[in-house]
Length: 477
Ligand code: NAD
Picture 1 (tube, rainbow, N blue to C red):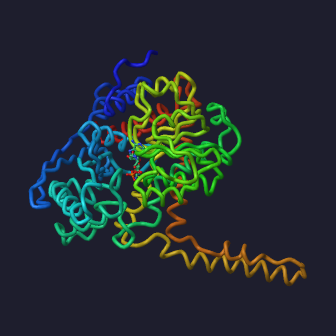
Picture 2: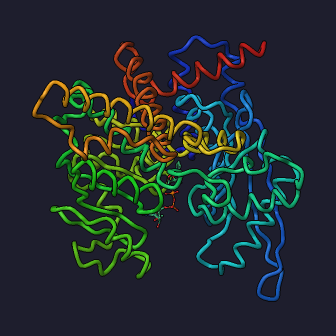
Picture 3: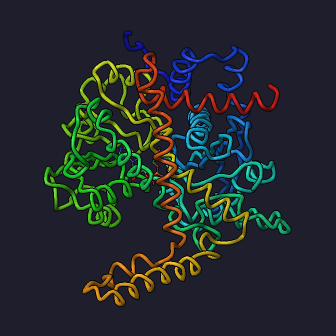
């Protein structure tokens, strides 16, 4: 197939991928259309008095599918935010939630703003006003619509949003569940900040457990020593790069940021680079690597794994043919356009799709929402009881060893590790790991099991769309 002449928009890209999948499915045309369309998009323009005058901001909250409620999806703060983008992201949320079996519909929000242009107290006023506009229309609500962080937002903004919702709903006992990604002291959960990057690591680990899949990408062995390029050292990219380099032995040979890239074939120390970016506003001047001004040219550098973790549409029909990575891991949403996807597939590049790779965020958001509704932290009831049980077993083994005169002892390190009950962070990581493994296997079954399915992305869409369809059918649609 020839690549399209015009690059499709983000929303069109998602639809093209959706259409490729439904062509291989047996859905009635009516149901197909019902799943594809975005149910509603609310646009708000509001004014905030700042620096002596009124500034008008534009924001969106789009609801793609309410086959399950609440609907879920991040709120993005960026100057480029627009309706097409928010709708594309909301659609991806529907498919993502279905793929990792979290019981939510898909939604997304955005505010057109460059957060770097405003002071913290100004950002608070703007965020609270946006939250007010959404909450009064139930577009922020524990049982109807639950936002989370995305590009340009984090714990700080989520804390303002939950506080704003509380002020407007003083008697709602479940108010903490109106938004996820909150700081721990405002109802958050251990492991949410790292969750999306941690999910990227678990996704790659699962991929590397399947030699056939590695072979499809022309790779072999383990993650140890693999050369990785990461674009975007924000929440997702930083955690993915940190965990892959510190725990799996990957070499981060290049990091691409807004102001250029740093390249070092021996591997970049990620924490050090992050501190440098914090202090200097960019990667330029980092002493442990070579600075390349044209960051996007580094996407085309030789490596084993390319992780775009910044934004959408960075691999397009213009540069796709020159991208040399045999494996692309879509940590960002929509980094590969539909046109680029076609070019890459034709040359045998394996792409792990966004709706799978970055689902760690919404998975742990789901855990946080459950925690908020149950009003108790995970592990609180059983941790010490499990420890007591394990200790009984250790004591009994030691008693038997002693009585039989065996000249052996359990090591103190083993005993400590074995007896220690799981706290919230361990439980969250375990739940996330399980989710990423199971979701991968559900895609893989279709990818390898059906001759007409060429790639993991279409396999992922088929799994998700069938689940959404099932949900609509059981409602009688
Ligand atoms: P973030 O704002 O924390 O980080 C984005 C990073 O990308 C920043 O370091 C920024 O400087 C960099 N960047 C921006 N434009 C760039 C460019 N043109 N070239 C190179 N670098 C650039 O955002 P994030 O939360 O890490 O989100 C990144 C992507 O991951 C987005 O596509 C988002 O939708 C997706 N995502 C995020 C989460 C989450 O939990 N935060 C969950 C799922 C998906």
